[in-house]
Length: 289
Image (tube, rainbow, N blue to C red; front, side):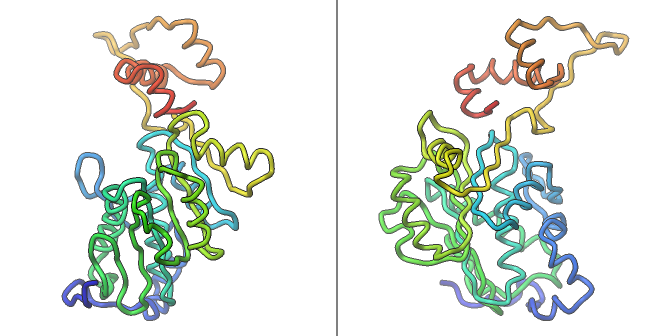
């Protein structure tokens, strides 16, 4: 564990910040998150403006149930959960521990790096003294609150610690999900569990949890995000020399899909091009309807 690091910001304390004019921002997770910066897909540092899915995720995390998220690729769900966990650790005046877990150690470390980058992007006066900053732990020096990264592939796994909230990313791809869930619940001791994943196959861990909830055997706040709900998954139809849309021909199955889910041509065109790259089976797995 690294010792306290000097020179990383002003060393502001959360108790002092909570008495400033910024207190309303600190107390509102969505408002706080909208002030953070992240590295986008192009490698640029940009302000995190929550999209519709991210807003719904944060609102669910503030509810009173554990959260089960089934979603398509690249909608920002992991970023939303990481931002909420960073906010939770940042504003806590107690030494709470939040944990982020993935099916591979590299993925878990990547999630923690997102959280570290959020702190480093804050204006200096809002940065805090840090008592731990390494590949598996990030912790504030004044309160002891922090986030740790854990791999689901490790044999010791969750048995070596306890936490106040746990985010398991890509749960459907973990080995022995029943054992993972059991140790997660034991490590939480009543804290918040967040399972977030794309689908893997029929009967995978997420599918089983979803069916259990439908039968009333599990109490989850379930969030499902089909691909067509994501605003970025669109390709504008081509235009002719006069700027008018070029008529496109659609197959019967595409027309039926558009009618069933009220899809427009920009969404159908994105779907067609994505299927051309992935194939229909992988598309259905990566971008569920």
